[in-house]
Length: 480
Image (cartoon, rainbow, N blue to C red; front, side, top):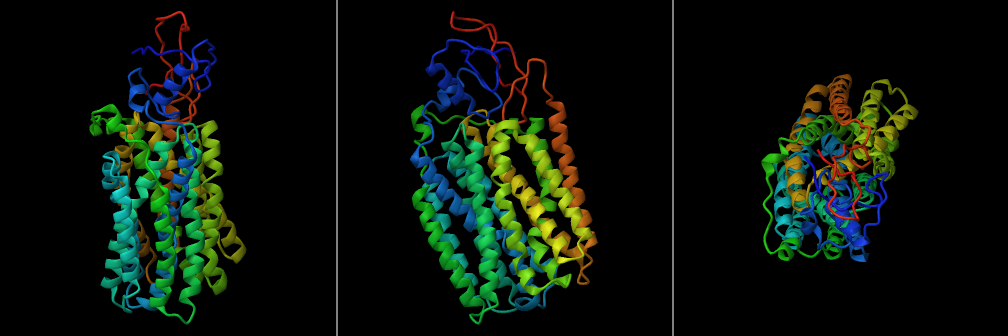
């Protein structure tokens, strides 16, 4: 099937030069969203109202960064809660039972993405942010009122309340950035994703210091809640949506969600990502307990989770820069391989030095994996109207490993702390996910006339009919 579009001097590495006007170039690039997989002449009307990134876009990046810091950044510190609850506050509960608190948070973080996605697409971003911020603050302070050995009180406030608030905030904060950026979308989303890594660095250190102080559980949580509340209020002020697309178009565009499930690449990315998540969440939840039970110094064990999240900061920036050049899926495949190798590397940890090396390697590759998921889904959208739906569907399906992964690992671990079982399980799932991403790369190998894009690095091209003197014989056009 051929598509008629104006030619451009260079499109994703195309070798063809022409005298097309800058207006035609901008219209076509807007249609492609710099990373989309398909284009047509009519697509340009769907995004013609979108402006290039400006100061408001970068203020939005700051706000989204703070949202990531207080949502998934806080969830990334659950390993501190897991160790504290098991050793002191919920010592009468098993590791598997306690992990349900964190897994519920994780699952709601992604499950409610579909709700956030729908509301975002309907132009309800600001009301959604205000409501979610209020719910987060309320639930965080309610956690401080929970009594020792009262599992249901902690589960309701931390697992359900905070989890729901995080879920309504997390996905839209990525989507709003994707709506602002085209050319530097992967980089902007990588910066936003660093918020979760910075939060995962600050929160574990802060919580460990507070829990080991004389303040007690209640006052410790209130101190942490006060910081989270201030950051979320700043985020709700600085994040701003672009001008409403639907009001410009005069009519809301219908999105065929069922078509997503017929896209093999989309489904393989979702399934592969879910398999990898089994390996991703294991160290995030259990690495501090792992270090403690190995007999390593308490001070080091307290900082193990912070070290992991500090390493992920670099993993959330460097791979995104490389992805804009070499392709999202190519870089993602490398990240998953490194992630799986690091999980299996835990089997050989016998000393503090070995533990540090494995934690650093895992942190870098886990950061890369986490930050590249959002740009991949955004790049698959054929128009801006699909971004929310694609994020939402992927988020709902991602609840499966989030919800059952940590409890499965806890059950495999047992109260005797047999670490080999959860390590082998998590590592194997990660490598299976890598195999699916490899399949995507193999089925989309470069052809003789292939050109570069930042989805898989190469895309096929289709011929373009000649309909004016300003058009060359053929132009590279992305196609699935």
